[in-house]
Image (cartoon, rainbow over all chains, first blue to last red; front, top):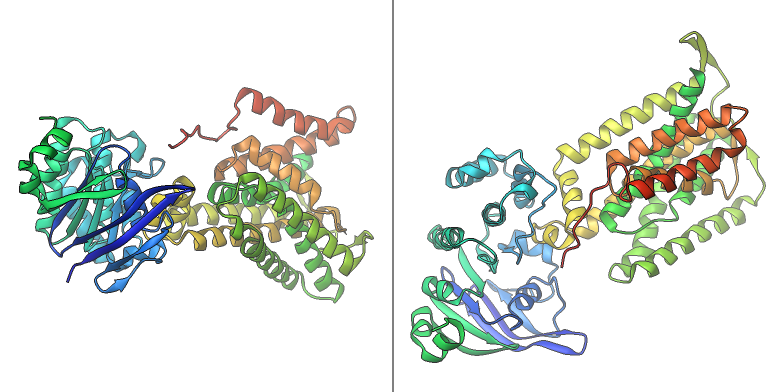
Length: 236
Length: 287
């Protein structure tokens, strides 16, 4: 059974239907990506999935629980965390406070200390700057912080919305390394990306979203090799 | 010296009220114009308990219960249904709640001014002058409340969540923070602070009437804007500054008639020089 399944999701902004009935599945342990051009509806899908936006239609099931109408904040204790587009770290709070907020729903002090230690080990820069205001970090460091913050909640499913957006090539590689590492540690990943080449190369499966509809799906390797996809999304 | 102490007392009162405005603005993103009338309700609660020969502490507790309940009720019934409405609709609703509370006070207590004596007018010699016991209580409790509130916001998990909601409500939800709970909590804290303010205000003025909340409400709002609306230290500094300026101005025979003009003039000057207020932060609009 799929860890996450979305059936026939529809989302509208006023009279405009942005998502016109899409269905997708994410199995436990997979990296699944949703690729598509600007305005295809990738972020809308993410927001509707977490009920930051109302759905017109559709059903979302996570690990056997219907979460279609569950308030966003209740999804975190269930095991779903999202790294939103544009990172949205708390720029007026310190790095340490951001991490602490990531663990808002966790109550074990020991677990918190261990998770923070692991994150600081992987990103020493976050330890160095733990008392610094997060808004002063560079874009790449903020992305590391945003992903670390989401991991503080020990999610089973991590939703990543455009994690490589606006980053230098060095940090783009770092982000994709981190995604692979997170999956190795046992977290399932649904990734939304404009950088289709990078996304497909680390994905088990992928869906192509075009103006509110899923037009293609397949394994990452299949889609990477597909001529039409190469022309439309990979710049070949 | 006694002018300074009286000024600090009024300053403390304005700061407590300003904290209610600024926290609700920062977290719920709305101006709660009914906040002054919550003070009025607290003052009537104190009046009722004291008229029945109740102890001052019992009166304070009653005011805290009444104010917190009214704050939570108004949030739940009037403001929460408008969470995604335009700011103007929420503002008008808050003005409506303000008139509703004033009218209810008139129905229950009529519109007469009534005298209240909170503490007997005792003074103790201090700093080469005499200071009233009421002022000492006001100063001590205002200091304690502000320290406790600052520690609560800086050091606790829920306090940190309040700051998170204030900065980015959507991202806060993604952390698992229940935004409705945090907003209700903010109203509860702001209203409880208003209850303390109503006690201290009555100690100074000794009169209750249905429009009692209007003047301290508008002054404290001014203080919150001077300090930078949304900023907690700003509300504290703005309140104390306004209270001290007001008291010094009204104790000088030459300036006394212009006291209110000086206070609001200060607001205009600050808004001209620094539109975000003393402690306000310029925020980039998020797209």
